[in-house]
Image 1 (tube, rainbow, N blue to C red):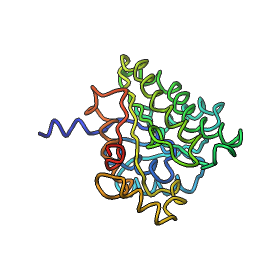
Image 2 (cartoon, rainbow, N blue to C red):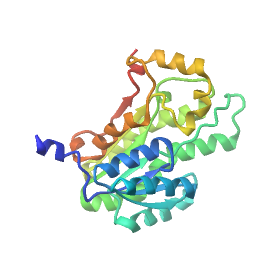
Image 3 (cartoon, helix red, strand yellow):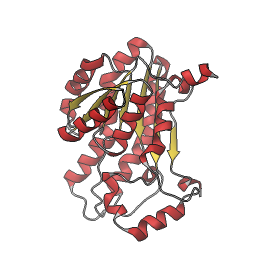
Length: 256
């Protein structure tokens, strides 16, 4: 039994988590650290990064901060290089950075469209490509993307966001097809509705949140801790034969 549980451990692995200052990114960074990984936290703002690092270290984990904006493609090579500094070559990357402008399709600006596609679809590919050589050299790596209910369903104001998240499911398949034979497994998690800074506007509408709760099979909306087990599984040796998949962690929302 112990040998099975050992396969979920990440001791000796280094992980990069984008969007790690708050919300889902921070929760997944804490999960990987609790499983033994040394985690490099990346986000645009310094203060949330410092808070996340302090929380991980207070729990006995190892973390470092790299401030950066994954929406700037020209900076990704330098970001990947900086991420390898604290704990060595990156073994695991979690692409959790995200944003949602919630504009009606008639009103989406060019800049808002480009930013959402760049952060949530382009960055996971181009940043991963900078990290793949180090993973390939070890014959082991994990890429974890963050999909969404909007990968499969259309919601009001979600044209750009949903397009990015729909694309990430197919990108995950292509990453798996391209790199899995090098020992680099690529998967995604598709969260349901979770209380995070990104969903604060939705959670301000009690009637809408109650409606969404009723759409789940479990009967409640998600808490970020609900995502942690899935992330550890998909980033650990326990998922050695799992690649190209998107796992819905949505309380059964898409099952109904």
